[in-house]
Image (cartoon, rainbow, N blue to C red; front, side, top):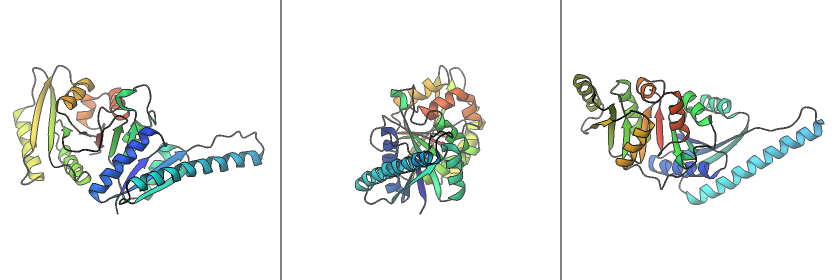
Length: 275
């Protein structure tokens, strides 16, 4: 059975991400694995027995918190297979090792504060680091996300061929999606070359036979995070989907600092796909 991995620090935001992941797992026939990475702090100058006590205490507290979370989640989602794992170490290194060892992990779901508190996130810059280094798609869930829904999905595109594969992967990962809208943001007074648009639409149509691909080119004063937020609100999107930041569209629209903002403080649930 394929797995949705949910890194957690046992905060409210991480719990919301776990609930979102469980709802998605129910729709897609996957299992959920909760994953907690923690650091044991102690001084090398302490006596050996004291250091061992610190390690044991940290292990016990982590496992106690995980047991409590698992109990809550399995009670809420009795029909979903939910597992938990606690690991000593650093988040990025541990997560990369986890992904190398387990090729059944198809998706990472992480929680953040969202736009209600831009000063903090449950993992700080870790969300962006995971996004950059993860070989699998990463779904970021704001802390103010309402109930699970994928009725209206916006795929932000710059009409690059690699995005066709990303679209296919999106529909495979998120089978609850029935319809989606391809959104292209363009600065006022400009527009995508018609031949490029038509070529991309034809290739997209080949990838989704029998399904009409809705492509919407939206004119904005400035192509930035504020425009993305306005579009998401105006279109009442439940989910935004982007190709990963190293690709042309994301680099052009979201500079490094804005990419971090989208990853750490998403407006609505946002999926990032490496392509």
